[in-house]
Structures are given as structure tokens and as C-alpha cells.
Length: 217
Picture (cartoon, rainbow, N blue to C red):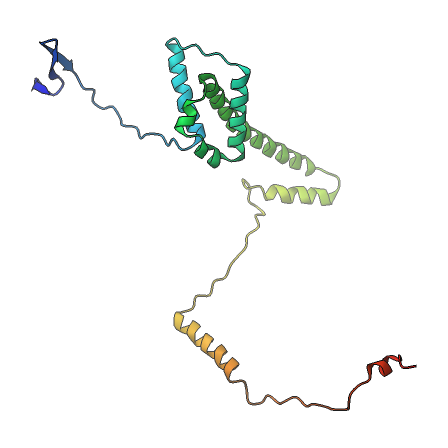
């Protein structure tokens, strides 16, 4: 327990140490922001945190050697995450992550980070390639190809010139209006109109199918 407070910067603690009193001077730091704890549900976040721990331990003497088993385990984990991130993150519990070797954790973190960057980079490159090809086709001698290329360029999200839009008309009705319409339809089904005539039945006798088809002879 604190024995006394000298000022707002220093707190004096008295603690027993072999029968002697030892005073610890503590000077609290002010203005340090409190950061919220990261969401550790996603595997990428777990792998990143584990990799930072391994890097810190390695800087303080931990020996990290990568072998074939580490590479295979990291690759399998990354592939599983790419196929189903939610399921893989749920299966990769802290207990199971703790069973992985430091090398596997480092490799998994590196693969996931490289994978994420490569996807964004590839998508951007493909987008630029398609746009550039369409621009080239605007000079095509065939007018149909030129018009089609211009149309597709106009539909690019950044341009939005020929963006297809669908309009939906919503007619608002009160509950009383809907009830009246339902009553009207039900009344038509229950009480049909009086001007409906009964069908006339014409009885010309039974028809001999064999005779009509010429099968009697």
C-alpha cells in the first residue's frame, strides 16, 4: 500500500524485503493514449500478433530455423484461409496457434500479408490493362468496335457515363385501401356477377371412336 504521496508525479511505496523497508519511486507517465485491443478473431490478426512476438523473442536470443514442415504447415494454413477465412479463423484457436512453431507463425504471417497485397495489386493491374485495351479499340477502323469500346469505357465506374440504372416505382397505399381491395376481390369470388349464363349441354349421342378413326373395317 502507498505510504505517502509527495506530489502528483511521484508515489512512494513501502514493501517488505527481508525485514527491511524498501521504497519504490514511481513516476507515472501522462498523456499516453489508450489503444483498444485488436480483434483477435481473424487469423490474419492472430498470425500478425504471433509473428511480432516471435520477432521480439528472436531479437532477444530465440533461435528460429525454417524447415520443410514449417513451410508446408504455413502454406496449408494460408490456403485454407484463402478458401474460407471465417471457418479457418474459427478453427485456429489460441491453443492450436500456440502449438505451431515460431517459424510456422512467421511464414504464415508473411504469406497472408503477401497474399493480400498481391490480390489488390493483380486486380488493379487487370483493371488498368482492360481500360488501356478499350482505349486502343476506340481507334479501330470498324465503327461497331469503336462504338462498343466507347460504350464499355463509359460504363467504367470511374466514368459512369453509360451506367445502367433501374427505376422502381413504389405506390404507397394505406392499410384501409388494401383492405378495401381485398374485400372487393373476395366479394367477386363469393358472389359472381348475375349476368353469367349456364353452359348449354349438347347431347348428340355417344361417339364411336373406332368408327371415327376408321378402325372398324
